[in-house]
Length: 130
Image 1: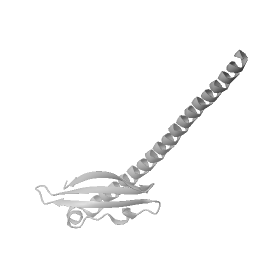
Image 2 (image 1 turned 90 degrees about the horizontal axis):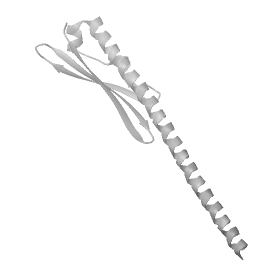
Image 3 (image 1 turned 180 degrees about the vertical axis):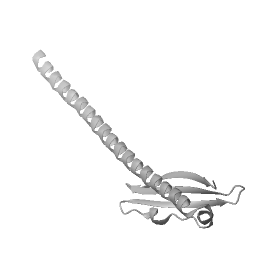
Image 4 (image 1 turned 120 degrees about the vertical axis):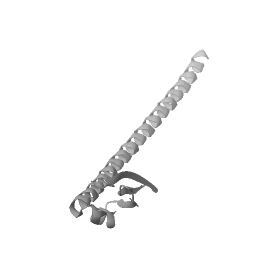
């Protein structure tokens, strides 16, 4: 009779050990999934930062090429804005300040959609007459 109780106890211990192992494996799977999602978001944000920086550089070149008077009169984002065709959209907002000194504040926003949520990266630059 004592032998029978012991063998039943062993079965319970094995079932509990399997349950604990299953919980550990589920936890590891969730941690792995979260890590992959975070990595994917970081890569998307880094790409959006690069696109925003490219647009800011294009606008800076326009100021240099056109001269301050023409740039201040009609600042444009040009071909550096719009749908980038790979899930990213880039726009620029221009705010003029008549000064003195005259200045143009440019806010470049790059947006992308991931899992039904929209994310944005914004970069702002202030251009003055020099």
